[in-house]
Image (cartoon, rainbow, N blue to C red; front, side):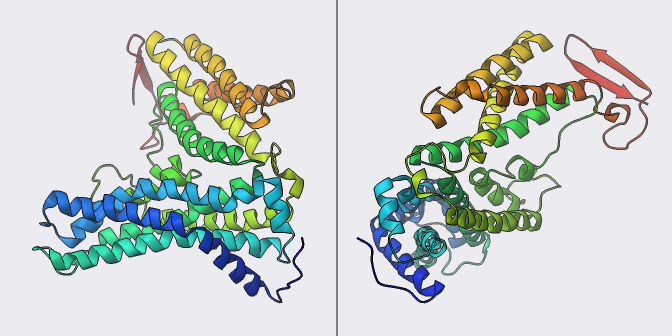
Amino acid sequence: MTSTTSYRDFLGEWWSLYRWNLRRSRGMILLYLMLLILAGPVMVMALSNGNIYVHQLAETCSIISMPFTMIFVLVFSIQRFGYMHNKRSVDLYHSMPVRRVPMLLGAWSAALTGIVVPILLEMIFIVLAGNYTWKESFPTDYNGFASFAGQMGMAAVCLSFCMLMAVCSGSIMDMVVSILLTNFFYPAVVLLAMVLGSWILPGFSGFESLMLFTAFAPFPAMAVQHIVSHPRWYIGLVPVLDSPVTFWIWWGILLVVMLVAGLWLYARRKSESAENELAFPAPKIILRFLSAAGLGMMAGTIFYLFNGNESSLFIGFFIFSFIAHVVTESLYSRGLKKFFRTLPAYGAMALCMVLLYLSAATGFFGYDTRLMHNRLPLTNCSITARRKNTACWQ
């Protein structure tokens, strides 16, 4: 049955859906809060017998709460955006006299509230717990609370990414697969490209940037923000290229882009996409490329370490990249009925990897004629074939 109640403005539509989604999330919010309190300040204070500074308690709890936040971002995403992947739920939601943008934005806002409010309550609990310690009645160092603030900011980014994947997916499984593949294989591909490049290309040692490894992987970036924002805690682990300002500018831009893209695509998403393969094919194509390249590079690297020759690298790469391509396609398409149509995409991925290898093996457009740091001309080079070591000097 279609409701005849009408809302006159965008804010009224959003507020109605926000409250409705928030009421339906109360149980999960309470569970999340309970886990944060028990596994965080309560456990730490019990283990320390209350003999701990408040800022130390906040620093420790900010690290402990991070995996819980990651898990519950995914849980809230499935709970609040899962209606898109059920035909009966889609019919119910879309029969409401509410436009799609405030509908989805209300669900996103409710999920974000369910993540942020328990973290804020945990911070208040930590401050109040200072009255029961011998060390400190009020925090004098706010780095631990800054970590909580960064965690909340990255939770908003992760939630926006999950919303975008939900809009592009036809089922909850597709959504979860897309989220997991992106956050695992993007860092893996970048890291392995740096490692293999340092082996093949003389003078190249890779780009030491944690931001680069997680530039499009928001879940690992939640841990990176903790490291980048507190370099004195992780001396030697924070590269010079990374800074908190650059980090937050980048993720602030991506937050806006993902949120706007998700709302824009949802306004154009067909209701018939529910329980189908995909609403929009772009994530499937990109992630199939990433997973095949990532697993192939992992296997090629392992084969190369064991056998020590380039042919084993290619054998491992092609075998396992093809396996990853087949598995990814079967997950998204619920079988292999469209497998042969995807072979050109696999060929394109393999061609890109071969061209990248050849460009590095032939000096990467003249890069090998210059040293990495001082850019001076290379005049002599000696290679120890057995150990695969290269020594170059002027």
